[in-house]
Length: 334
Ligand code: TXA
Ligand code: MG
Image (cartoon, rainbow, N blue to C red):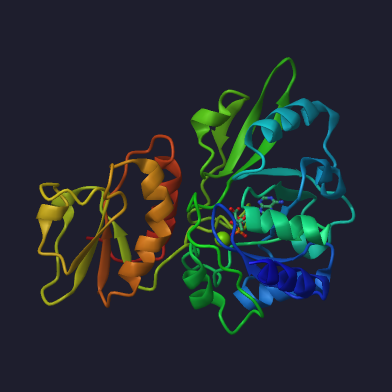
């Protein structure tokens, strides 16, 4: 591993990109202060440059090198970073002028977090510079939560994928912007649901969802309605009674618990069933497994993936957000 870390640092110093594990998903990292390196991130992912990147810092103290924290929210930023960093919470803050336009897609704000993954942190620290890193997937496709998935997405397009097993969270970070309120707790605008839940954030402020961009031009660009999508059409089936299978087609079920007597499992003679939470039926396990399971179903030669909804509490909000986006480019209605 030491050799891989050294190689990663050397490549990043030369202005190359490297895929690295984070606790959420594998990321494709570049020196955030080097616009040519950042351009390679967009190229390797086929990502449009209107979709800005998250900047990862090695320590809380480095925040001031990439963002200008306004006085009105300084205390809240301190509280949030003390509570959730290093970890899967991304803050949208006014950008520091040193951050290249390409990183923020020209926005006056920058998205920042500190990763909790030991490998990512070690590289970030050794490099001594912030790392711009989106997920290490081709634009719009399923995020990689293992080294092999990272290689499948970007192998041959990037000089190095550093492997460190499966990601411990499995879903991309929660993204919020902070709006101060005179004499009251601030409002957190939730740009993306993720591992840090609304319930956890509510201790520090009021959480409001940013208007959903389905069918609208993207205002938080990466929040495109269709995202994280398998190539196989995925249908989020809210009501099992509405399932009308076409004869001769192969259907796979993305089940929550996979329980033999569950209404979704019993609905059809499925070609395959994959379970989000085969063990305990817990949302944390489901979050970790979601992209992995989606990928398995995508590789199973099915005509359709039918996904069972999970309850929208805690981590279930982020899981349902990803399932809706995975389903959003399907014209199929069952
Ligand atoms: O967990 C994560 O956040 C992973 C790991 C690698 O850290 N990264 C990740 O990056 O998910 P990406 O590029 O897939 O998602 C970044 C999101 C996009 O939706 C983008 O639009 C949003 O962050 N974003 C970045 N800068 C922004 C800004 N200034 N204002 C609003 N949204 C922003
Ligand atoms: Mg992504």
